[in-house]
Image (cartoon, rainbow, N blue to C red):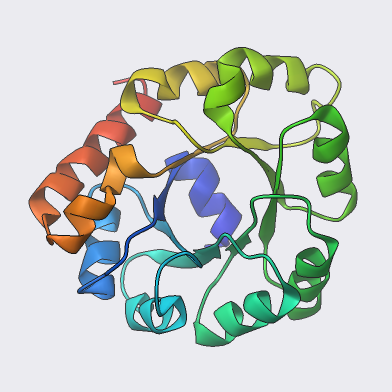
Length: 206
């Protein structure tokens, strides 16, 4: 199944930021078992390319986040990343992903940035930081850009997830409230799965 189809079905993806990921494959599979099949490992994670390579091949769809350069995008794709996410509108990353045939989500916040990301071919547009504008910001952006799929990231929780979707978001990225660095580093897989299930219930309206 295409990556973006998985995201549209699940409506939630995990963003992993940690100083240490002891077992990347088990972490990714745990999130997938909880109903969150897209897992993004950010370039702020030490040895992220090794982490990505170790996590692929299981039940999750693995991506790279906080990608800032074309070189990072190519390296992540070579390591096995199936999608790429940036925190800003970065034409060089967009070009690298287009060249490799990999879906990418550029980060944006303002109307001008959202439009620029879309014009660069961003498969969906990540709205970051989502908490700064809340669901109302998503609703406002949807007004002039009904054709652009918006994916809020930053400050998404089970409590506000449904509100973001009701405002018009097609899916969400969740970080520390889903798989915090402390939980990842301590290998608290049961709790991570429980949180994944909580998010899935929230986005499903349950």
